[in-house]
Amino acid sequence: MSDSDGDTSGLDIASAVAAKQLSAQEAVATCLDRIEALNPRVNAFTAVHKDRALARAQAVDQQVQSGQQLPLAGVPFAVKNLFDIEDQTTLAGSKINQQNAVAAADALMIQRIEAAGGVLVGALNMGEFAYDFTGENQHYGDCRNPWNLAHMTGGSSSGSGAALASGMVPLTLGSDTNGSIRVPSALCGTYGLKPTYGRLPRTGSYPFCDSLDHVGPMARSVAELAAAYNVMQGFDATDHVCVSRQPDLVDVQSIDGKTLRIGVLQGYFAPQEFDEATQVVADCAKALEAMGVVVDECELNLAEAGRSAAFLITNIEGASLHYEKILQRADDFDPDTRDRFIAGSLLPAAWYTRAQRVRRQYAEEAAELFRRFDVLLAPATPIRAPLRGQKTMSMGGSEVNVRANLGYFTQPISCIGLPVVCAPVMQSEFGMRQTEKAALKSAATPSMGVQIIAAPWREDLCFKVASLLADASITRSEVAPVSTQD
Amino acid sequence: MPKSLLSERTALQAFDPQTYMDMVAPMIVGAPHPAYREGVLANLATAHAMAKVVFAVELDADSCDFAGVFMPMAADPLKSQDT
Image (tube, rainbow over all chains, first blue to last red; front, side, top):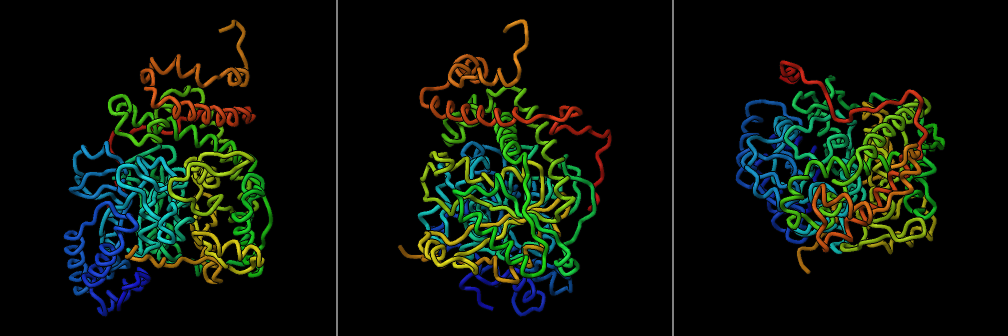
């Protein structure tokens, strides 16, 4: 099995390793070669742990030889550099953390994926302290969109999206506080899962905003995403928000798609000025309707308030986490992050508590909506990947900050902890009018995303709808043809 | 502060990012370096805009403050179900 193009799926690697048609060591060596060739262009990795990966791959081969069944046998994966890796310093995209002690153990999510046969190959670039939607990083260089290196990947799990889209690895882990898995998934053209708040333990990951932090997998197919999610589940008391419940293993075949009721979010989620983003959602809805699924329009009236609440909670909790460092080492922060943390340090407590109250009321509104609908659809980002260095975008008749507003559609959803699969829609998809197709072809990067949202703990429904759309080729992820030459 | 309370929204209308920063920052983070001022002010203005949206929500009568991050600690650590 050759994977010089990087488009072999993780599950095909696992099958081949399990069948002894391919060794884990061969799979990992091919992966490492591709990283070495492409990373100087894409800048997705901040560290490659070659010796560890080869040793781990050898151990996986021995486990397979001894008859162990490993669902991710030999699957190379990489993690956003806020996940602890034993004997490495957890950078969280920052210069400041370089002085921290090395981690004593791997993050729990790494342990679980490796227990399933996965092989960690390295740590991935990210926005500083995860306070970012762009993928730009002053300390380690911008992560570049594999579809067009002049463009943003989205963030803050920038390397997680770019490493997948360039075919360097078939599986990555990211974190999502306000959209940091979903934004790079949409802009790089990959799948991402932001699970229910409290579902996956964050043990061994560097925090940002405790009230809103999630961790989750990213991949190039629904099946790979589900396979990773299945082995990542399970209670862990170390994370105080992790909920004690048995893993709900995803089995999309067990769900009858025709019984689903789909709500297409309007109002806040359908502004006219972002017609390409809303068209992506409309096309997905149309395809589902053609399959016999019940589709209707709906609204979340408190979405804007939820987004605002998430902004305040993030700003204040994030600033509180970094308060000491802001006082001592302000110039060691990325200026954009620093100014936001300084401002967050000053905000009134009443704003924070009010935001938490509004969040609760908004969650109750969403719970009512899920009496009528099983799954909601919304755009993932307002626009395609902006140019790196682009500071503003047009919104509501004025120029607004890109860094804060790429998460316009994602922030209200994570605010109330709903599970979301973000699925990529590539250019020239079905159903587009000719003028739209022409516009899409002229775009510099090909992908946008659709958020497939369910009620808390119903990730299975997100996966079902994602698989329906993927089976119909409405959503798909491809490896970008990254040149190794200028 | 007047004897009679302002409404929350009236208080928000009175919020001025520059005045607030100049009065409050020296007691919390120190007076911001000139190189930081513009960015901090811009973020305070954005936060103010967000707060106005949040405070515009009519809360249910039975709404109460939720401690977003607090969980009582058991005397003995819970055992992981995975082990």
